[in-house]
Image 1 (cartoon, rainbow, N blue to C red):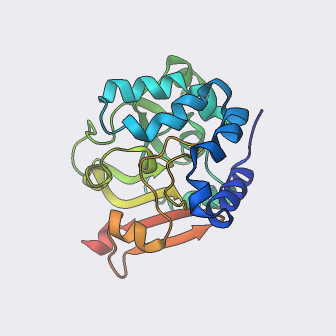
Image 2: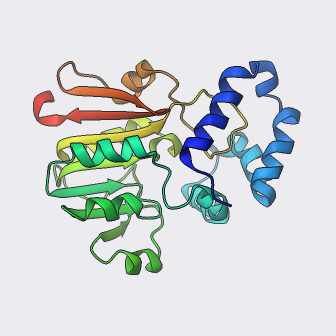
Length: 238
């Protein structure tokens, strides 16, 4: 079964905006729909926020490996069409790094006109073989193995909502970026039980300003079909 990003955003809107919080945050209200959609992965998702900040990076990675079949319900990418088009329009540098490349969909699109390096906490040999034009590396967003200002453009989509330390992660993205930083995250309210392994939530534009920073004249934040796109021109900010 494949679920489009558009459909998942619509379901999320109904649950997060229309259901009263006292019901929405109830384990008993969420258990049956999560069991229906996530099947054997339901327990991991229901219990996720109880332990995620207490466990090691190794255990964190093992959870993602164990629930990979759930993460793939949206097919090749979590990006909606509007965000994809805007990213491809914005990217101007020829040397591009994607952090949190997932299944390689965006890295492949970017590699049509750019030299692309893509990294994630786990990168399979199958992914490297599928997209030979892309240079893949295993890396943790909180400690990227790249020199300062290594890439003209750094892109990270649907990744920062999963990290433990968003401030450290954004600092690392900026450190390796020379000209542009592009980030996409879901516009989502914080609830304990969600159909995603999210640790960070960004319901408002000022949520992004607080987490990522905002500099007048160099930073642009857009709501594109239910997801936030944050773009910073680092040359203007400098």
